[in-house]
Length: 96
Image (cartoon, rainbow, N blue to C red; front, side):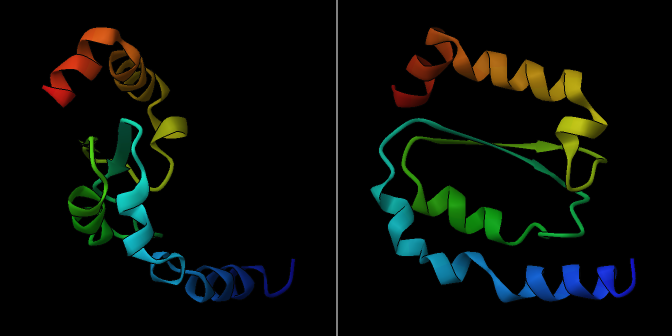
């Protein structure tokens, strides 16, 4: 597919979290889990600080040594974090 790589790069750069507006993140009231891979070369890692500060009731977990799709690269690890987050006890510990 000719020019696929360039099209993907252009699309990715044209849309950013700042276009969404970080101030809207503070309006999220549900408990949140963000799993972020520390080797994410597509989205990078810098915006995670803003998510952590802006979103109430957030749990940010770094998945070490994986890229943009840890759910495909390490599905068992990803599933464990999601299952733990889904448990009642975990939600209680975040909020109290």
